Image (cartoon, rainbow, N blue to C red; front, top):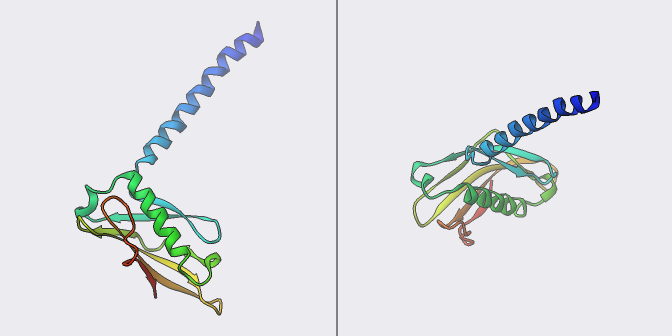
Length: 141
């Protein structure tokens, strides 16, 4: 009888705690002010996101996630040594442009052939559906 009483008392506490965690996850799921990117060292980097007013009504949460992952992959494979690549979290990731061409601009850090880390810029251009405009995207110093 005592075991049954303890079980009935403790069981609701488990369900109560789980509800708070799931509510917190759903709140953060639609947060467009930050994204998580994976560096060449397989670590996660949280980047602040700034979206211009012209583009805010075009970009959805799903498009933001897709485009930032694509831009991160593009930047990672366009530096000399992909294992040294990491997003520069000191500067925000910016999205701006018009209806036809939208630009994602971010600063990245990567090492050159001598192992010296440098600050690079990545401009990833895409259309209003999230498809990359291949001839216009670039990574440079």
